[in-house]
Length: 339
Image 1 (tube, one colour):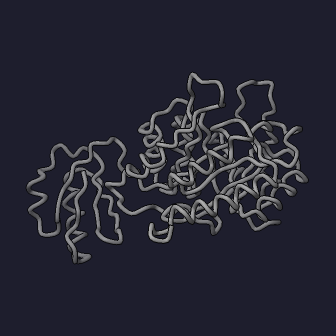
Image 2 (cartoon, helix red, strand yellow):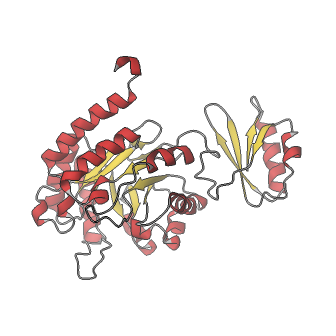
Image 3 (tube, helix red, strand yellow):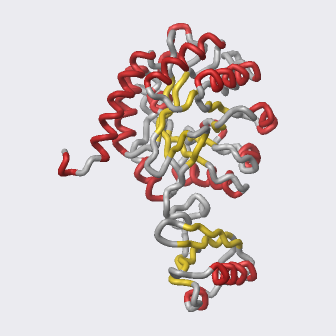
């Protein structure tokens, strides 16, 4: 349930209203937007008399929210949320690209790739130090040593970094990482999500392999319910019967999520397709559909990459993609009379 506050309400009037709602055994969550102030009511609202609430001087209207996700719901928070990490903003009209190798392999490798992607316009460096792999015999990442390399990249190139966390017990190791990524396999690792809710770091939450949009939003709700509202949602493809691509990129999820939630939406065309030649076209489609950012894998020597070399762009391919993305964003944003 949400209560739309009457325009011009005083601070005392708002506090009085919140006090009344608290007495009704619900938690009032005040969101001050550009055009209106909304109070989201979290908890069991079945006993609240809507007509009585609407009759109060401080209340303009009351609406029931049928969706199970509350804090992530655009009805609770009409304005877009802007998530900032290391000076880089996502959402609310801000667009950014995260780029780098699937796995951190060496300091030299990361430095070479970071220099290339930053020159091409990437805002955030991505790299996996802990790798969830289908096979227990596959490369599992460099772990703590890999995180130390990411810290060096961060300082050397003045770029925020994003890396995947798999276990809540590893949180202290991620102190210098700007964005914590929750991979598709851990989207419903509720113990991890609850712990991330206690942090103040931005979270990049990837959609699970077979997760519905509502399940993705409920996973975000776990994090936000813990107090951390700096969550970005990532569409990275879902599993299908078709084997021509690694996954199927659900481009329709972008406008659907835009209507349902205020959280920034990021797209991962690398994992969505699994093949280098398909990454850029899907990135263009996601950008045209209104994504707030991209996460793209780039490697200077993909033939010898420790993981996912088949979907990594070469630096020169990434540079070309970035230049085309700029044209697409300009075209989408331009008034019709200018086209």
